[in-house]
Length: 387
Ligand SMILES: Nc1nc2c(ncn2[C@@H]2O[C@H](COP(=O)(O)OP(=O)(O)OP(=O)(O)O)[C@@H](O)[C@H]2O)c(=O)[nH]1
Image (cartoon, rainbow, N blue to C red; front, side, top):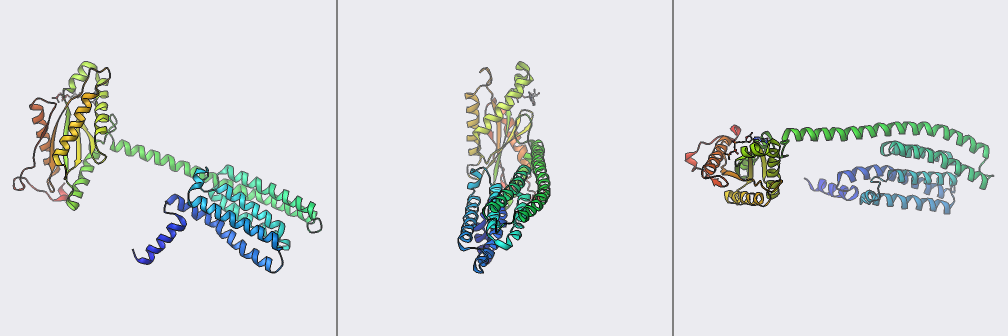
């Protein structure tokens, strides 16, 4: 990254925020900043040429800048979320509406043009407000305009001709609902899109879950485990981070099914998965390899098979400490551990783990055997593409 783009990034992070959601909201608030800035320039000019009296002009300027700064800070610091309105959309629209009505009262002969700013507020609302909020906004606009016009006619009859104000009000009151209706429609479509997006995301997550998880235990399934191992093998080729595999098989599992029924067998599989997961690190991956067989992948190189032995020891102790259901059923397992050396075909590593597991079963079960990796010249190497 060049220095210029790094500086630009730092500046935009400072102004808009680093969080993507906050950035999007602050960007939308910039529409209001734009509107207030243009209005401020015009207002200062109008004060200078005597179109607007100094005191009300300065009051309106203060109102606009205090509001603009406050809303910017609330959205930028995300305090707005704590206040229950992340984008401060409706409050910003209503605040701007008050500013426009205020401007209408003090801008003399150009007051009718000020009403055009209401369109800007409604366009802002179209993309930020919900359908219900657009309705509130439209009603507040017509009502606010009516109240301000009636008050001005009452207070300054010489300056505000009732007939003229009535024509302007009827015109605005009949146009604004049409604009609001469009905004309402857009807001409804937006609402539906947001809902459909959430439903699609849920369906996608569910499909991903089905494709990668074992339904009974919630563990990674065999297919996904294979792709995770392949990723680990690629990392190993690039960065030399090795890993161990432990093939685990529950002991005498058939007996559980035979004595307690298939459902008890399912509960035992779930119990093993939960207990094992609680004992493993975030970086370890446990998969249901098939039936009552599980495959554990532990990033190695540091603790190596020793670390895997410790992990399996912890799981064994936890299973002994937490018997199943009525307390009479304690799960035990045998396991075979081996390391995966860089460049070895996965089948060979799995076959070694299987032999280690077989040795553990043959030696009386409820134990773990480690089969070391043969010396390099004794084992066939494969290219990464053959993995
Ligand atoms: N309840 C249940 N049982 C399963 C599931 N998958 C496999 N099994 C059962 O697991 C049992 C495995 O039996 P065996 O292969 O003889 O192994 P074992 O009884 O654990 O004996 P050892 O491995 O030699 O200790 C079989 O009875 C399978 O039906 C499952 O999803 N749910």
